[in-house]
Length: 114
Image (tube, rainbow, N blue to C red):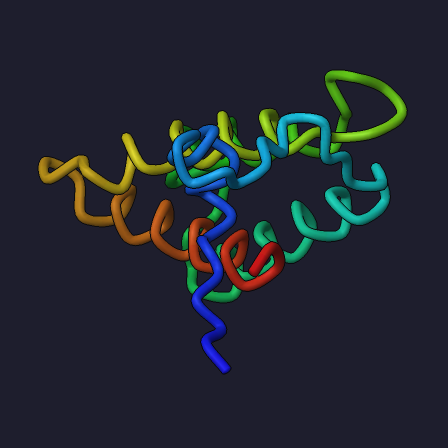
């Protein structure tokens, strides 16, 4: 069997519409699932000594995840927007601590979603 499924990021962006992959913009997560994810990210950051006082830029991206924009659920588009902001921070070569914190957050999101 060939289990060649597209990644969630590929689907979230609409994928290759010529392939017939479904667009998953309508996928929603329970608010509690994303709240738990945000809490785990903050916990991971604190455990790795990257506290909100030291790296506010990453914490300011993660904290709003606790409140759903489209109450009462989070959509994959919301999560994708958060990932894009974190990817910008992860590409910050001027600040190694910010880059490392953003990478920790991205890995936690990817582990939860994938």
